Structure formats: C-alpha cells, structure tokens
Length: 313
Image 1 (cartoon, rainbow, N blue to C red):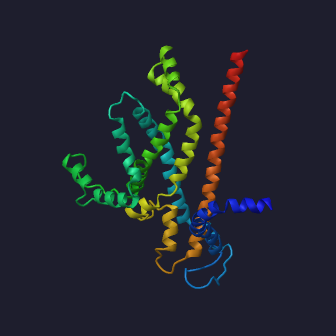
Image 2 (image 1 turned 60 degrees about the vertical axis):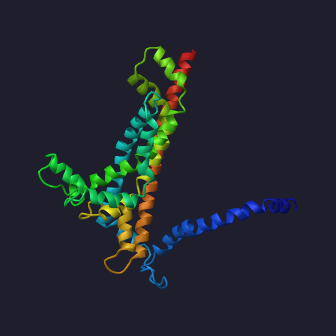
Image 3 (image 1 turned 90 degrees about the vertical axis):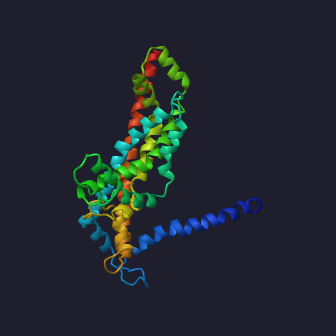
C-alpha cells in the first residue's frame, strides 16, 4: 500500500520524463537493436526480412580490405588528434589562462568558434578554399611564390588525409582547450606562488606542477578526444566523400556507401554488420586505452603514497 502511494506521489516526474524516454527509445535504442537484427539478413531496406544469411555479412566485412582501409584511416585520425590536438590545446589553455594575457577572452572565443560551426558547412567552405582551380589558398600560394603550380589538396592521395586530420584538429581544438582550462582553474594559485618563492621558473612550474596535477582530468580528456575523433563523417563526406581512391575513406563513409549511396542495390544488412564490427573494435580500443590510463594513474598514486610515507618517516 505504501509503495502504491509512493508511485502516485511521483507520477508527475515520470509523466514529464515519458517524451524523452519515447524519443530515446525510438532514435537510440531501436536503431541499435534493429542494426543487430538487420545484420543477419541480406536486406535492401524494402520489404520483409526473409533472406537470412547468418554471419555471412560479418564474414564479408571482416575479410574486406576496404573495410580495414577505412578502419585504419579512422584510427590514424583518432591517434593524430591525441598526439597533436591534446598538447596543442593544453598550450593554448595555459596561455589563455594567464591573467596577464590581454584580450584572452577574445582569443578563447575565436578558438571556440569552429566548434559551434556546422561541420558540413565548414567542409563545403574549405572545399572551395582549397580548390586547385581558382581556390583562394592556391591563388595566395602562387602569388607569393611559395609554390609554382596549384596543389590539389583534396585530390591527392598523399595530401587529402593530412588535410582531413588538420581540419578535425582545427574544428575540435576549442572543446579540448575548454576542458584543459577547466582543469587548470582547479589548481590552487597558492601552489604556483609557493613555487615562485622557491625560485622555480615557468618551464619548471609547468613540468613539475601543472602537468602532474592535470593528469587525473587529462585521462578523461584523452578518452573524450579519442572517442569524439572516431566519427569524422560529415567532414569527410562533404570534402572528399572518402576519396581519392579511398585514401580518406573512414568507417562511417564506408557504411554510408553501402546503406545510402550504393552503386547498385542498397545493402542495409551488410552496412549494419560493418557498423557493429566497427563498434565492437572501438569498444575494445576504448577499454584498452582506459585500462592503460588507469594503470598510469595507479602508478602515480603509488609513487605519491611512497613519497609521502618516506617524508613522514
């Protein structure tokens, strides 16, 4: 009886949550469940699911070299973001966290503007800017004498992926910078003042105080950056569509090509299987990264406790 009264007392919160739960179930839960179901069928998106193929779609995806090419390109982009974007955003955050830096709020805004700009629009704009025929960037390079002939940035297999990596870093660097700024502002000012009194220079303060104190939040930032960089679909699709010759093909464009932009009959079942294989691979990579970062944090904690124990003795 008491439980029934409790349910009646809390009925309105559940009523207000219901629209969100319905939308979540319709656009998140069901697509996930549906993808698993479709992956066992050869289905073109129309009609009933009557052609059961079992694990055939998974087998085809695993042994398709183009799938692993797209997986490798996705992995390169993600690792590049970790290696380049993380330290770059940290340096920007340290610079813009300095109260002596005039106009730092303006620079924060300028760096963050690409984050809130629609990625598809950014892709279209830079496709025009990088055009080898009349593109403003090529025109500037030619007029200044830096190059003697136009560079086909998006049409060259050697340059296209580098351009995509640079664009993803430029687009997401503002978010990572905000994360680092949040971490920097948790460090007490007294710590820096004490280090300066002891005669520590800027570089020593950064290496011996700032970096160690940022390690806990840095592990979270690294995970968020890695996961966020695994889906550059809108940028790649608008700039290169995975070309030239699949040089910038990523898993999302690979899946899109079979499901929504096929050369022949759509293959929703195969696209679902490829998406699940990619999702499982990402899950494994994320767990490995989380485990490695946890080991690093645990090692630092043990070292810190040992130092404290030695000091107390």
